[in-house]
Length: 419
Image 1 (tube, rainbow, N blue to C red):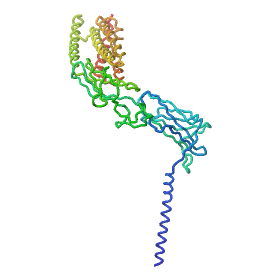
Image 2: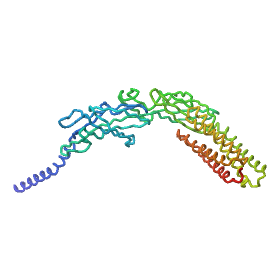
Image 3: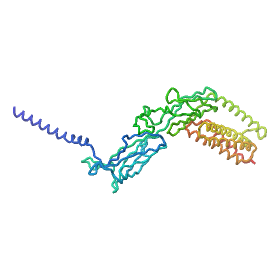
Image 4: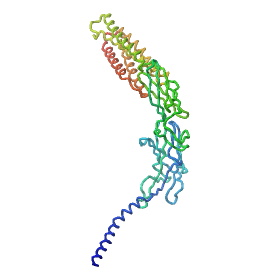
């Protein structure tokens, strides 16, 4: 019986030994993994908070300190070194790399952004005066000593964001427009930062810009009972309302935003004259063909100059419309003076070219004006609308392109008819 107990004890002891041998390496790995690593070089911001909030266009000073954080010189600053600073945008893409001199260990630099973005400034490397490069690489696996450690600074360069809330076009010649004004980058719940880290020295930054100054088509907008919602009644006489919203605040860069929408009450004033004008053009075209007795077929070669002249007139009227849109919108804040000038000039040249085509004179001038009208009604119009990210009226743009193509076909294939 004693021998059996002895064998049992031996087996228990052997099992414990085996378990201890297996567990010991795992325990050692856990301990080693929890050991705090040491770094030879540390570059950290000198400010207590690593987040800063400011306005677009503002020039902000960022300061860092480079110190020896391990070894005999631990705690002393690193003089006469060069730090590589990496700048990442909100998409974590590298947009810039700065080389900064740490003459006394403390160094600073100024930075500004012309666009709204959240930029992160991260030191990624330090080169001492003797040429040694310190990077975040493992130098000694046994002691867990790394070469480089740093902390980042995040700066928010913000601006206003204006969105169209509602519009009322039930009254002829006017539109009641409501817009919502917020800060673009701030989260919906706002942002809390130290007083020194904000442009306006606020500790809590709300999403809504309720104290902004807003004008809609040059009319001062009033803030409604709902914070951030501004409203104004503006005059509109075009079939499409082009709305220009200017938002400003003390110390902030003024923003300009454009919106467009159909004015339902104004549209009939333009629709019926356009239909009447097109019918009149068709009637006059047939009359001119019959009067000149150049054949029974309207599309005969002898009628090409007449058809080209009529299409010149139609595309010229389209240019006149865009010129008037540009003029009215420029008076209300849009930067469309170029659209205004080009539209009105193209209208004048188009009428002259149309009259000359009807008289079958100066074919070259008529061809040049066709190109001018196409550039105005398509390229200039699309660029002007895209400047404010407005919807492009493809029906008018494509229609003017088709008319110009037919006009070019008639003019270019009537060499024998022009004198």
